[in-house]
Image (cartoon, rainbow, N blue to C red; front, side, top):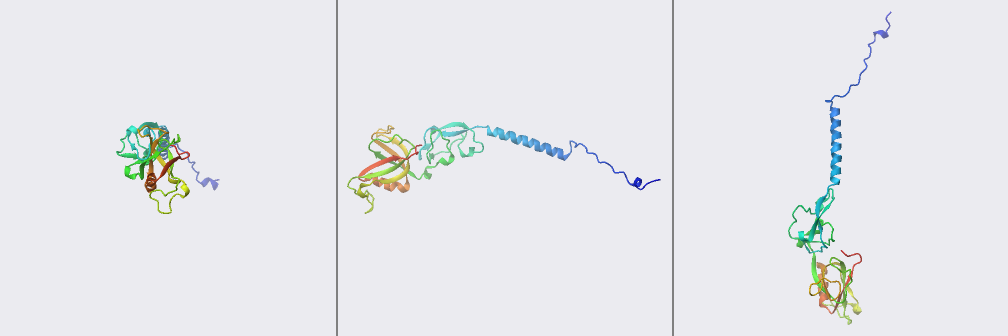
Length: 228
């Protein structure tokens, strides 16, 4: 006797097959693995790669000409930041001057140099009587003060009523850069009768020049932590 269940079709069991070499999924997986390996190798090699860039061979002060004679090549790891510096393998642009102080051995960023027309500073020679602090050197930051004579007469260029009361000193310029410390014969010194060549912002220049022509003396005070 035939039962009802004998008349139902027998289900076919699906078998899993190994993907072949032409299977798109296998090919995609191989591509992803290869890309990951290549990316990792590139990252490791880039991290260990050094490049020769320019560093200052001595302190650079604003207005100083920057050329190969004032620089030296150093090998450093910069990663993706080498565009911020001058590569030693490439020629330097012409007529470069320092726009800010760059310390001895410091990498020279492109933003620290430029054309002389970008420099809003003027070099002023200031005679200083007496000894200077040993911290007043090329590239140092100093405050410039004017000490009037004892009679309290107004400095040249002052308007009536703007003179120094009771001979009190007044500040002429704040945190200006010392471009050079020199004696009359040109010898670099840090004491004795010296002339300081300081870089004064254009807006402070009239006051400094007026004080140089007035009765009194100029005092230079080093800024704490301001040595280049």
